[in-house]
Length: 211
Image (cartoon, rainbow, N blue to C red; front, side):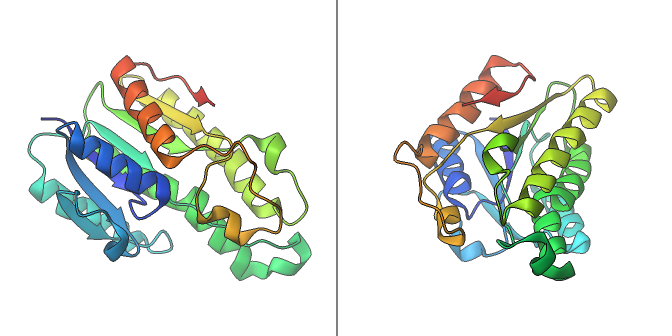
C-alpha cells in the first residue's frame, strides 16, 4: 500500500488529494496548520506552521515513527500571500509570503526527503509567473519564481527521484478571497488538480505539469 505525505492538507486542493488517495487505497499522512480542516479520510494527521521549522521537523519525526515502509509521494500545497504593493506590505507581510510559499517548501522538502527513497515523487504547486506579475502580487510572484529555482536544484541533487512543479492556473479555492480581482470563469475544481497529481505520479515521470 503506497504512502503519501501531504503538506497543506486543509486547503481545497490538499483536501481533494487526501480524499482521492484514500479512495484509491493509499495511506495518507496529512499535515496542516488547522488540523480540524483535514478530511476525516486521512489516516494520520499532524500540525505544522510554515513559519516554524521546529513544527516541520516534529511532523516529519512523527511520520517516521508511524509510516510503514517509505513515503512514495510528498506534495507541498501550503501557500499564502500578503496582497499589497511592495512598499506597503512591510517586512512581516513579505516574510509571511516567503515562508508559506518558499521557505516552508524548502524545509518540508528537505525534511521529507529523508522519508523517501529512489523512485519517490516530490511535487510542489507552482504558478504561471506571467499570470501573477500584477500590482499587489509582487511578493507572491517572487516567491513562486524562486520556488521554480528551488525545484531545479533539488532535481540536480536528487537525480534518482522524481521532482515536479504542478502549475494549475486558476483553481476554485479560497485564494480568490484574498485578492481584489475576480475568479476566472474557467477556474478548475480542486478535484481536477488532485486527479492530475495522481496521474502524474502513476506516469513515473519527473517533468513539470502546466495546466
